[in-house]
Length: 252
Image 1 (cartoon, one colour):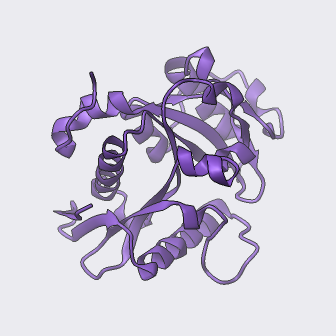
Image 2 (cartoon, rainbow, N blue to C red):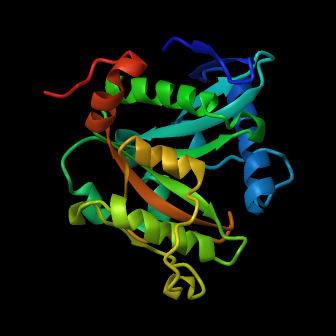
């Protein structure tokens, strides 16, 4: 898969690709460690400065780099066929996916998405999605699922408010609903305020791409966040963004 290049709004040149060199993957894991510990207060249980788990070696890693070759954005993707061989998706540690996986089609899972704070103007995220979209269409993926995280540093209030707001407009059909294995602590969900709350940028980007939320969030105590499972029909992505991503939509 060829890399692409683009200038960010600050004029800094960015390039993106599927990481094939071990140095690029390590740099992506270092960025993940930095973002998750500093912004979520995640307990990585390691002082290596690298976020790594058992799924990494089975995933495709997508990276965006600046003009100095530093990784400034990353995400990873696990193909459903591989997930079946290794015991399931990462999200199955947090949700019961039995009903969702009964739907026909090929699934893949996106995860560990993060962008360095000084590159969140939009260009880096757009380039990351371009690489992912190309892969999804070329590999014949029907559905993309993944966990979208919300910080729990406030005790869960924001997580419940974001969930309530998203469910009103973007709740998946019953056949794609999932059940969290660890419900959120506290009773913030009972709050009766109806004013809108700012939805995190990454979750907003999922919704703009046509994603839906599959139910209530799961509490991730290690990362000190609430995870929503989101689902994206790749046909919708291909149809809406074929021209932008220079893709051939795979709709019959």
